[in-house]
Length: 254
View (cartoon, rainbow, N blue to C red):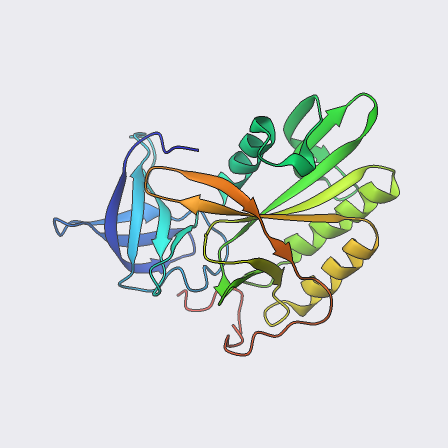
């Protein structure tokens, strides 16, 4: 997926109120950009880091600029816009880049389902096959060569696992898709050190028939695209030794 308008490089001053970030442009101007990410953005929101933002071109928006890419301390570009993940996965299905989800005739987005009045990210349909419910999760946090999800405790994520398990019970196919918006990892695992309950529920979901698919992306300031599947590590309890306990849903945010 190519960016419709060029990205502008800047220096992150601070992220605050979850959805706002102050960014200093090369000419010294400081602007406030929208942050399209509800997580803690662990390792991706350090003051002084390089970031890339995009002008939406919409003068009616209070904050017309949006933060799209962050560079980690190790020089890795990370796509922080969680809204892009659904588009990347849908594009991957339509182009045949995700063979595990091929062979369906129709793709619908944001379809209501389940007893919890949730909306599934993607619903794949074909007349002679069970429906396939695909819940997409954007993954940005990593420790070494292993990415992990979530980067903050997530009751919403646990709710989604329950809904996927219910779809399996009803005879449907259910998939949790980890869209890893960074290219420096080889595997994905649950973040037991951040949300042990999510890790427990994820393992229960897998045991009940929910599938996990994970793909990494190639990221440049021109485009982001899915490039390869990743190994998923869900068995056993995982603790990343050098990653401190977050202590709150959004550490470091005033």
